Image (tube, rainbow, N blue to C red; front, side, top):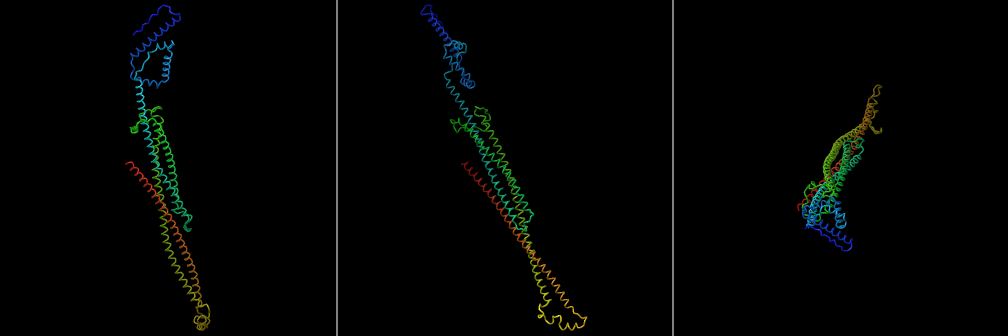
Amino acid sequence: MQLQSVPVGSGSFGPPSWRERTVQSIRRAEHLVRQTGAGLSAACRRPLSAGFPQRLMQEASTDKIRAVKCAESRDSICSKKQTRARTAAVTKGSPAMFPPPGLRERCTAASSAMASRYMREVREVEAQLQRQAGRVTEEVTKLQGERGHLERALRGLRTDLAVNRRSREARSKRPAPVNTQEKDGADSLLLWERKELTELKLDLEEVLGNTRTQLQALGESSRRLLACASERAQVLELLPRSGSAGLHGATDHMQTLPNSSFTPKCKQVLESSSLAVQQSQLLRQRIRQTLSSATSRQNAAHLSVNDSLLQKVAEADGVQQSLALTRAATRQAVSRKQREIKSIIYSRGRVQGPEYNSDTLTREKLNRPLVQVYQRHAAMRLPEAAHIAQGSAALTRCLTSCEGELAALQGACLQLLGDLHSQRAAAQVDQTILHMRRQQADRRDMSSFSSRGRAESKALTIGGATRE
């Protein structure tokens, strides 16, 4: 309905100022009525769009300053209607838009949908973080197993170094005739084994240090993943735990924004953990290769030294047999020489005759009657005395020579006996060293077998629990 102005009568009713104020109030009211009617008609002619709540929320989130200014302008318009300048500005502006009655429900539904979508995205990110944390934990378990293998290998190397040291000390305490200044093949192999074991020990210690550093990096990565997952899970209290936890790689299509569900910090933590897992896998492969090489080199050095010691024991046994045979022959020669000396002494005694003249028989004397009668002629002399003297001298020389030979034989026999004892003691030392080394090697093999058995039993237990 068109508003029509009512003419004011020309009669005088009260003071003129009162009349003027009354006329001004009437005109102001008419102007407000026309303005209000135009706004209502425009609002009725232009319906509210369906996307108004969403557009309103987007404008409120992108330009908060403009919204604040608009609110202030509306408040100022409502509170200061008496100001003519504000009234004119509102009149010249666009007509007011009135939201529909269901705006609250629409805004509530839009907010709930936005929150639900955000929670689902956060749940996918949280599930991805949890899965990555599980992979890191699994890698930590595998790397700890490799670290256990490294530590056992290092203990074996330290034990072998101690055995090598005791072997060298034991060989240095062999008997004097055998322990000369020159080193034999077994001593050279023991020195080579010590050098080889020292190099392996340094290599394994370096790899063990890298393993401990990698374990610390994996632990830090796991803590960061769990912290991010816990931070993301703060908005998941209202979601069911039995729902879908997202797919693998669900975060690939998500945008990385500071205020989004997939923040740059989560992306950085996931990338760093993936890099740490890859480095750990490469390190485990290197550990397996290093352990295989170290085990083969350690066993080769151990077997080389054992074979050398076994060869030395066999050589010592052969030398002992030769010494025993030579000593037996020397003792036989000593016995023969002793019998020969006895015969020479007996023969010389028989040639020289009795020691006392009273014990000499008449037929043995050089001045017996037959000799005296024969030597009455001046040129007739018997060679009996000269022959006896020559025979006695020859027997004395033979006796001296035989005694010297007997002394030499006896010295050789004693030397052979000393060498035999020395070789026997050296062989006993080498046998003791060989037995100690074999026993230590068997113990090391049994310890590795028992540790492998424990690992297999643990794996079987875990598998059985998983099946259950």
